[in-house]
Length: 343
Image (cartoon, rainbow, N blue to C red; front, side, top):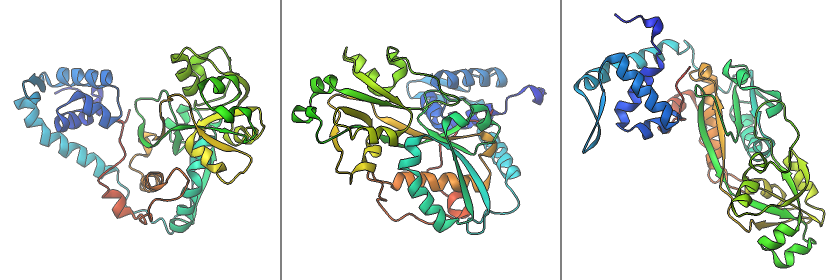
């Protein structure tokens, strides 16, 4: 018998999804892994069981006889582990009294959390949100479960984290109605203007910005670089509200996610325009430690935030009446958050 202490039990999670999908790419997407990481997992599984498990045929990836034999056994093992770690008591949001610590970008805090707070006040009035900034938190804090959730746009993330995409957002320009470039708003006039840069997507303490390091400036400047263009940035800030206030000056323009610009839709001192070139969509993601994956309170809060984000229009108004969440219907959700295997 193989020594269990030397076996990565995450491999059983990989195998379960691989046998269900019979496709390495789809299995990787479901687990939130890269395709190379999933391929490496399959290689390790083949070594562990001394069997190919999945072989390429004219019908795609096909399970071997050994894989078909293992499939129900793996499902039973994972179901047993899940049952073993479930608490003895259910989570009741109406009586819960605890603090949920969330790291959220300024963008997420201003666009998503007003609606989240409204739902919490109605469904779980005893829950308290402690919203922290990216500079307050490290990935190690999240991995150890000291921070319940992180909500931001991430370039990189530890493979052990679970994650889900809350929404995608386009980009828009915000500027004063007295800004002279409005008379002929085009790529050329856009490039002739003075710009406000706003971003803080990473974790940990921030550092100063190098205006010549285009790749580190983010989505907008990378998109311009692909066109062989560069804008003239006069202000660097990490706060969306500050950037939008500065855009009221008649010689400045800020390019930022469209949902953020909707926060100023009733402000007569600014107007919104489409970006005069293509900028790839921003993905707002929510991630958490595998240590908290099965915690009932955590699961309930995750589902409430996910449902609120999916119901929220770009103007910040709900597209439909949210369904009150209970422990039972959270467990029964068909579209569960995509998970990364616990490390």
